[in-house]
Image (cartoon, rainbow, N blue to C red; front, side, top):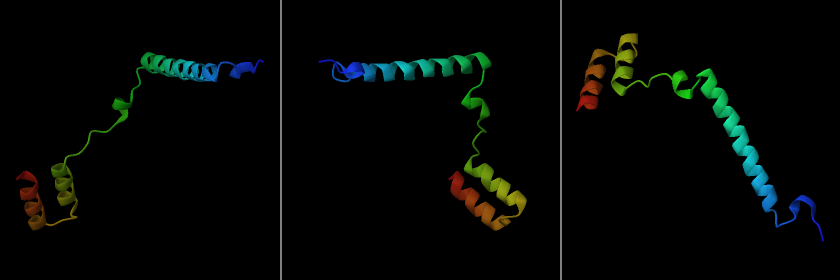
Length: 76
């Protein structure tokens, strides 16, 4: 008795799905390598906690006493 594509316990479907996922991944990888685009190029560098504190002090969000207190906490 033939069961079409399901013949063999469903393994044919699994292998076909794996094949297509690998093929699509290969095409995406090829396109990214040819265009030179990468996720790491678009990410902004992370600010350290001290940089954020300096920015908040410079913008007037916190006063000098709070800046110095938090700066000591972060440094030590």
